[in-house]
Structure formats: structure tokens, C-alpha cells
Image (cartoon, rainbow, N blue to C red; front, top):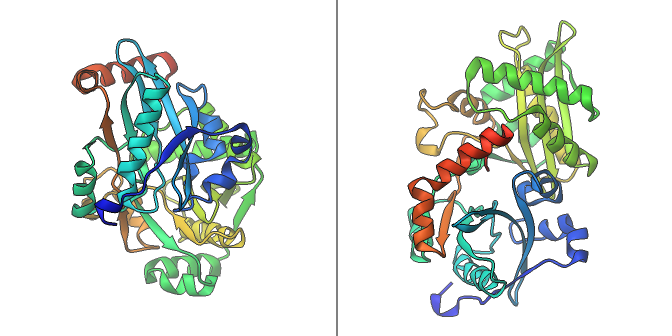
Length: 362
């Protein structure tokens, strides 16, 4: 789009009716929304260290519905975080969208010093130049799936299976041949405890990523399951759970959000078969894309020193391509306060939050 013909946007907070039907609006966004912009996720975050606002960006051609997470700090004012947003039809729309959000913050006298964004826009040298040209400053990435493995599951199941790597396909077929079985289980305390124990097992063995508290995960799972958007898959060995996965269907997108396993298992291909069962269930629910949710970046996918190397190896056996999104950028509204934030205020507030709640800041 030529800069002379940039779309103009207005920004407002959603009406009660829009919040009531939030998921319908978000999944109607240009890119189909993101499960981290859902009503379920809003319920997880609201009051959990964040104030959740529902933001609507409008232009003649379309409306974009986005979750806006807010934290308020002494001296600094408010930080706004558009988690996985704004959902824009093109990267050129981000600049006018941010102009509208900044105007809203000013009109409402919100005293916002920084707006953090992380749109699901695929990274490239040109895109990065456009974002910095729009006055944005690159910030450290927050979400684990800013680099991820995406699998197209729009074709019939047998075709999808044919298109994955021979290693993954052989693992699935061998597990099936040897009688390995994947069970889909109902949500509830017993299921949540089972998966959390498997996740702890994986983290203790591989130390890949920090684990939030059981309370956080059980709330997260419950919110998605209560809306029919969360599904549990388990494999058993010698009567005990050995592989577990939690997968979300949101609009036309599926996300493998959480998983874990015991070490030194006897059943070959069990984790591949669990994913394959989940993929087929997501197809039944109308999903056309399956996000494996988190890998090393494309440039580091073969780097054995990367903490996500093992996970990346497993996930890219289903889809060779790693998708790198642009990640996190800051729009600075209060330069002096933003500088204070970078120079140590963020680090201090993050530490205080962890001490106070035992949880993670973002």
C-alpha cells in the first residue's frame, strides 16, 4: 500500500454487546485472531496482575478486535500491551492503528508511557524497516511462539500425513502398528494434575522453559475447556500417563499449547501419535492450521545449545518451516519514563511481581 493512501483508523473500547460476543468478533479479524486474544485468555489475565481492556480499531474496510492488557506503575504511569496484536490486514495498517490508539490514550487521559505490540506479522528485513520507520523500537520478545512451527491441516488427513516428514510419518505408523493408543480425556482436577505432573517431569529433565504454578495452568485450562476450546490427549505406559498434550481450537486455528512426558519410554512414536490424534480432532472441529507453539528461530533451529532445541526438532518433524513473527515492539509515548523503564524499572517491577505472586510478569 502506498504511504499516500494509508488507511485511517479510529480506536475505542468495546461495547458490552461486543464483549459478550468477543470470540465471534476476534475470529472475524483479518488474520482470524489469536487464542491469546480470546475471552478465555482475558478471563485468565484479568485481575492476575493485569487489567484487561477490549479494544476495537476501525477503518472503512474492516474492524479489528484486540485484547489490551494494562499495568499501572507509580511515577511511570500506564503500560499498554497489545498481546499478539494489533490484528492488521497489512503491515502498513499498523502505523495508523497505533496513531488511533495513542489518540485514545490521550483523549481518555490514561497517562500511557509505552504501548507494546506483537502483531502476527512474519518477520523480514523489509517488515522490520517498516516498523522502525513507523516509530517503533524493537523490544525483547515475550511469547514463546514468536518463532513457531505451523502446519497446514486444511487437506484431508491422509494427505496431511503424507506431507509430514518420513521420520514423523514412520513414528505415527509404527506406534499405531504396535498398539499404542491415544485417549482424549475430560477436563477436571484429575486430568489437570496428570498433565501438570508430566510437564514438571519434562522441565526437570530438560529445563527447557520455566513452569508457571499449577493454579495458573488449571485456571487457563478450565477457561478454555468451559468454552469448548480446550482438549486433553494422553498416552499410557504400564497403566500410568506417559505423554500428555493440551490443544486449543480457536476459530480456524489450533494450538498445541502445553505438553509433557515421562523419560525413557518404551513405546516408540507415542508423542508423534498423540500429536497426530490431536491434529485429526482439530480438523473435525474445522481448524485449517496447527500451531506447535514455540521453537528456536529459523536461524537457530539446528543450534544444540538452544534451550528449545529438542522441542524444535520434534515439532519440525511435522513441518520443516519455522515461522518467525516480528515479536515485540514498543511505541514510546513518554520518552523519559520509557528510558527509566529500560534502565531498570522493568527489571525491578518484574522481580517484585515474582516475589509477591510467585508468578511471571507477562
